[in-house]
Image (tube, each protein chain N blue to C red):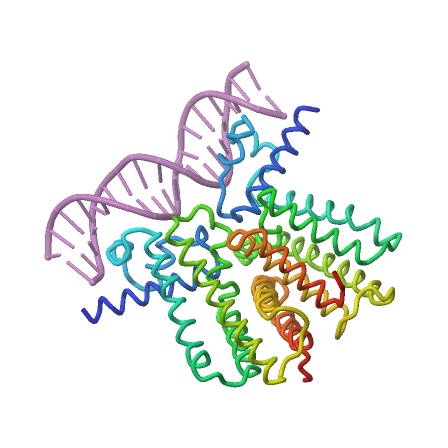
Amino acid sequence: MNAAVDTRSRIIDRANELMMQRGFNGFSYRDISEPLGVKNAAIHYHFPNKIDLIAALIQDNHELLKKSTSRFMENGGPAREQLEGLFAFTAGQCKAGRPVCVGGALAADYDQLPDEIQGANQRFMNESAKWMTRVLELGREQGEFSFEGDPASKARMILAAIQGGRQLYRIQGEAYLQDLFAQIRRDLGIKS
Amino acid sequence: MNAAVDTRSRIIDRANELMMQRGFNGFSYRDISEPLGVKNAAIHYHFPNKIDLIAALIQDNHELLKKSTSRFMENGGPAREQLEGLFAFTAGQCKAGRPVCVGGALAADYDQLPDEIQGANQRFMNESAKWMTRVLELGREQGEFSFEGDPASKARMILAAIQGGRQLYRIQGEAYLQDLFAQIRRDLGIKS
DNA sequence: GTCTATACGCTGATAGAC
DNA sequence: GTCTATCAGCGTATAGAC
């Protein structure tokens, strides 16, 4: 069973990477099985079809997000630190060859996907927005951030920019991303 | 020859639509030929392979952008009006079933594409950024906009947000997009 | 310019042995 | 759990008739 669990998670990892690099239609079972040294059938054993694989992958991402934000949600650390954490995470993902996030990678194929996946994706987005909103509220209360308008609205704006930034990273490169982060800081009244 | 020109441009139009909806790997020749009432071979006649088709499509987009911004570049109309024009254009594209722009649609497949296409795409992006920067500079000079930092940096931020917004439109819907525009206005010190 | 006919690799998927 | 063997279907692309 140990070997199986390992294979399963390695499949998800590789699929995750491919998904973010190329999108739903941009990779095949071969792209997963070959580098892992297993056969296509092994993938089908763990995930009957491609949709199942993607669903598991989203679930995985969702849990990662939950885990990495729960500490803050509970303890309420410094907002600035949280924001920088998101920037670092994003830059790290890009450099690791994951220039788009799950939502972005799925966006192009969104209406071809079954309802369950659309729903999971939506929940993922909503939770991200909720988290970001909370960070902004806290930052404002603590006097770390200053900005115009509703925190929720501002949160969506920042997430959209990061979403776009991740996409443009591949075309424009690392400097573009850092410049984007700098501008977000400036828009939040952070002196750097 | 008239019929040919017509078929050619109809192919580009349809391909453009599909490209933005589903990305490079998300559509096939059949998706183009069938609704147009022609055969796959007709497409191959006008564009020897898929890359040629995409190249033509980017060229087309590039020229559309040039045409729609040149008036402003020359005459220098009100910046606010230009910004609203971009918002309206974006919303219109989304509603017409084109939730992502060429660059975004290509982003997922970017490093699989030949250099010529990567280059064309890059030029497209750069020209957009140049235009947006010009709008912001003018708006600031005219006292219509107020914001922190370098206009070029702010321009990239706004374009990234719109890029992300177009992508998220499909998941979040029209209201999300309008909310994003409102926040951009707010960040530019526009009272509405 | 557009068609018919055809090639052929790759894709996701299944059945059954081990 | 993972393998081998095999499948039908779709994908892009080409050749040659009209």
